[in-house]
Image 1 (tube, rainbow, N blue to C red):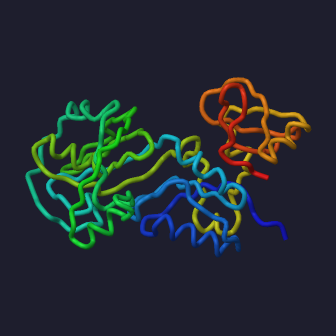
Image 2: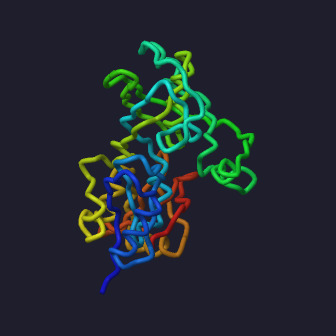
Image 3: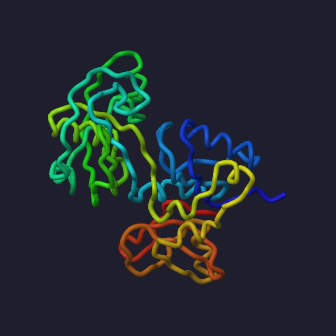
Length: 280
């Protein structure tokens, strides 16, 4: 029996971790070669691309893409995790929401990762330190917000549409927006609507994914990348990591064999392919 291979977009339910989703798929598809392309917190729902089989080799490429979310910020209570899963550590007034406050959070700026995150400092995950009651000094990182709009305002809750770069923490945004309004707040709901080229329109339920439904070929999953098609002779060179000429391209390219199969992911450096991952 041929092992499954490809990318399936799961509409992650609220509750399980991204690792839980991966474990469910390993059992359902009867393969250990399963990995996600970017963590969603347990309380978050929505688009979670999962790589299966040979596609696990391209997970890092897919994780580099930008994301889009629908997020609900609740004002008046701050939690230790900055979201609804944490314990309330302080309270404040519910402000009259002014959408003008969002302007300072659009564009490119530096954001400090939250303590409850998988970011490593000194080889240790921040959430491990947080659970031990420790506060660790951490460096801010450059992030970009390309879209930040108000979808709805209802009482203490504001629903936002967010489009951002990889590594952006919507939980931190929620806390910072509250602070800018002179109060405290936390992220009470989060739904990822897009991860790179994948949207909710591509997504299937976790149950369907575990049954093998929705698995798309690697070629289709990488169709958004520029491609370089090589000859039979060059395909053999690619498979062994050999030197192959290619026209200049920006960012990673999909190296395709004569029949259209993905042979590798590479960058074009000084007119030659520089391989990130060879598929075969």
